[in-house]
Length: 344
Image 1 (cartoon, rainbow, N blue to C red):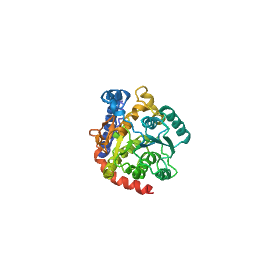
Image 2 (cartoon, rainbow, N blue to C red):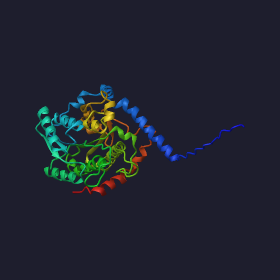
Image 3 (cartoon, rainbow, N blue to C red):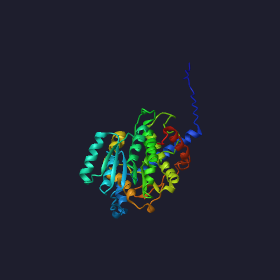
Image 4 (cartoon, one colour):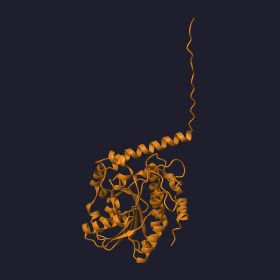
């Protein structure tokens, strides 16, 4: 008797939305292009290569008596920026969240620069009320603000909600930065055309278009992606501020520092920090373009521009489909105003 072996036919039908497939391919391209572009340009070796074109005289300018505000100034790029401005004679106001760390940083800058016109201001940029309170106190000084450096930033990998009900990354990187800038415009105007706002963004924004989902309510939360979104908002805000306040004599510039070895990077991206050991820039190298932007004659700069290693940089990578997304910045600013009511 002939035995037969049963056979089974398995048919697997997979339906993939064309739209989802296209989005997957686009995200993959953005990440790949960013990784390659970043590795070639954002590392220490990139800085050393680009620095061959730097002009030493650009950094020799003194800014004695000019008032400079630097947020997140107790460590990393913020500290290096505050120290660099103080060493050139500026009156520097270090805006820090933690008083103890702020006082330690202040003491160190006093010692290294011999500039006693460096002051500590306590403000938690994740709090709308704190930002409003700081701006109100500072306005009482009735001094012009020549340079505002929006440096404070955070990357929380898990969703954290502030006491005021906002997602933490958004609260600091977008809402706090927006409020700090808008509330200090009257003091920036006092400089009679000599004021500038420098916002420290991140090359990570190349991986994200502008989105109106500001607090990452759609989909599973991803801290790195949210940080990239926040930094894209900062670049688009800089463009819009340049347009909005173009007749007030204030220059607005975004910059990205490359991949620098800072406490923030070490704590938030430990795997990245470890894998790039020896290849990351120093905080001073990351802050170089911030200081350069603070010192240059405004006629040599493009208000609304993005800068990297002392030169204007592209805001979008090729074929990344992020440029048209900036059209949403008007509605985003309206949302920020409605959330915080920044008018005091």
